Structure formats: structure tokens, C-alpha cells
Length: 297
Image (tube, rainbow, N blue to C red; front, side):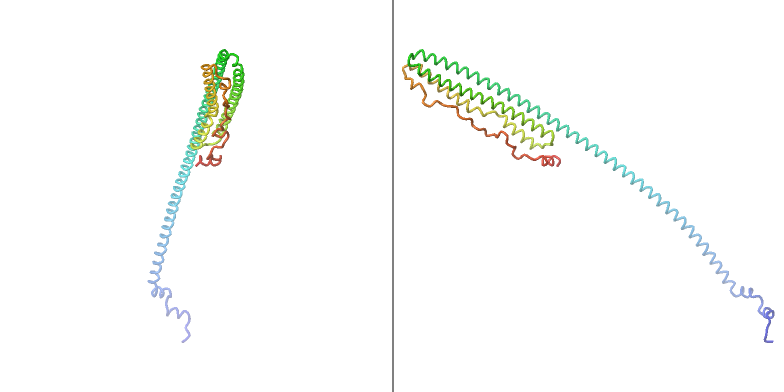
């Protein structure tokens, strides 16, 4: 009686599925519904995430493309601007070079004109001195002849003395003339050399206004040919003294020959050295690198 068979047990218990359905059926259905809702929500979330991810990717791609296009445009603009600046700089450099060449040519023409004018004035001055010398010689000879006729026998000594002085004067005048000619030749050579040096400096370097003014000031000092003025004044003084002696002799023919001869005839003074050094370097001149850096600065 205690031992139950399976069939008996089944009969007593009934269908297990029915019992389970009766006991936990509503809960199972509720859990199944919740699981289905969760699965549908998860699928919706996944779909929404996929859509948002795609939209985000498209947005990022668009922004990246726009940024790349903008950067490319900026780079192109910078390249164009750089080329324009280079072109403008090249034009400015060409203009500066043209101005320097024009200024150099103008300065060279001006210095050449001044040099020609200086040479012409020197030639005129030399010819005038030579003509005056010839006239003075002729006048002295005429006055000596007149004195010889008036004084008679005693004039021979005076004539010899005057001839000796005249010869000395001629030699001094000839030496002075040769000295003047040598000085004119030397001055011309120095001026041409300075012109070539200044032209070379102005052609090879960019010179500032201060340095150019110093060079022109030095050249102007070198172009002032005043070294032979003291000698001319001394010759003129000696000629006036000689004229006074001859006039006194003409007015007093009985005066002795010793009184007619000057005790200390003036001799041409030695050449006064010029205050301007012939080849002195310009004070405050700037080396090539300093001038170039100053111009570039």
C-alpha cells in the first residue's frame, strides 16, 4: 500500500504542466512580456545608436572636409600673398638699383663737367700768366733801353745788373711756370684718379647720403686750385719794385748805379704746402661692410 507505482502517482498528481501553468504561469507570461519589451527596446536603442553614430560620422566627415578646404584655401592665399610680396620686393630692389645707377651717372657727369671746367680755368690762368710775363719782359726791356740811352757810360754796369736780374727773373718765372704746369698735371691726374675711385665705390656699394656728402666735400676741396697764388703775388711785388726803381732812375739820371740796384732783390718764396692732403683718407669714412649694413638697415 505504501509503494505507489508511477501510474498511480501520475493519476494522483495529474499533469505537471498544468500544475506548473497554474502555479507560475502568470509570472512566466509577465516575464516573457518584459523580456520581449526589453528586446524590442534594446533593438530600438541599437538602431538609434547606429543612426546617431552614422549621423555623427557624416557630420565629422563634413566638418573635416570643410576644415580641410578652409586650410587649403588659407594655404593658397598665403602662397599667393608670399608670391606677391616677393614680386613687390623685387620691384622695390629694381627701383632702388635704378635710382642708384641714375645717381651714380649724374654724379659722374657732374664731376666730369667740374673737372673740364677746372682744366679750362687752369689753362686760361696759365695763358694769362704767360701773356702777362711776356708783356712785363717787353716793358722791362724798353725801360732798360731808355735808361741806357739817358745814363750813357755809367748805365753799362746798371744794364748788366738789370740783365742779370732779368735773366734770374726769367729763370725764376720759367721754373715757376714749369712748377705750375707740373702741379696742374698732377692735380688733373689726382682728380681723374679720385673720380675713378669714387665712381667705383658708388657702383659697387650702396652709399648713404652722409658718405656721399663727405666724398663730394673732399673732392671739392681737392678741386680748389689755390696753391700757386702766393708765388704770383711775390712775382707781382717784385715787378712793382722793379718798376719803381726804373721810374726813379728815369726821373734822376745822375743817381749812382749802386742806388739803382736793390740790395736784397726778392726771390720767389718756396711753395707753401697746401692744407689739403693730396691723398688723405676721408675722415669718418665707413668700411664697405659698415656702409652695406647701414644701407641694408
